[in-house]
Every structure is written in C-alpha cells, then in structure tokens.
Length: 125
Image (cartoon, helix red, strand yellow):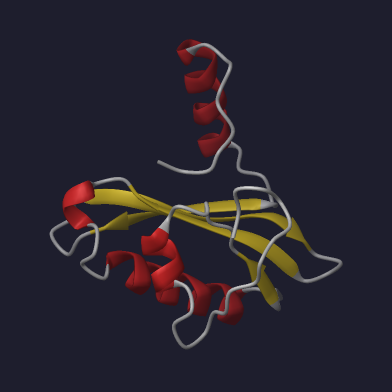
C-alpha cells in the first residue's frame, strides 16, 4: 500500500520496535492517525527525516481503507497536516514522494499548496 521498504524483521521484533517508537518518539518523526468523523481509523500521516538545519522534512500519507479512497479524506488530511506543520514548527519545505503508478496521490498533490517535482529515482514521482 505504501512506498516503505519491505520489512525483513519478524513480527514480534517489529511489534517491539513499534511499541518503543510509540513510547519513546524521536524528534525527527511525527505520526498522526487519520480518522473519519465517527472515529474510524482509516490511515496515517507522517512527517519524518526532519532536517532542522535546512528547515525541511519528508511527508507521507496512507489511506489504508479502500472504502475511503476518492472521497477527499487524503486531500483534507494533507491540507490539515501541512497547515499544522507550517504553523507549529520551523519547517519551510516539505517533500512528498509517490510511486509512479499512484494516480490518486498524483491527482491530489498539485492542489493549491503543493506542486509536483519529478524525482530522479526510478519508480518515484
């Protein structure tokens, strides 16, 4: 569903690492849940690889519930998240990569406050 590298650890090790990340978050990664108005968890937004020297970070989003695709949840989540990041942090630039076949993300991104930049990495836009 997302562009994360394939995990090679066992599930118990992953669960241990995930639990540790929740209890001891790093200053270079912040993850928030995306929920519907009735409280159903449908995905996540994250900003990570925060570079305080360059005032920039990478941005990620995943709507995992296919019933919620093409309903504006991603656009709303990104707009809200970007607004929060720029108002509450010193970050000035966000980078968001998407897989070349992910047309939903590519359609959503160039709205008002985002623009597409071609990345040289194969498979990425």
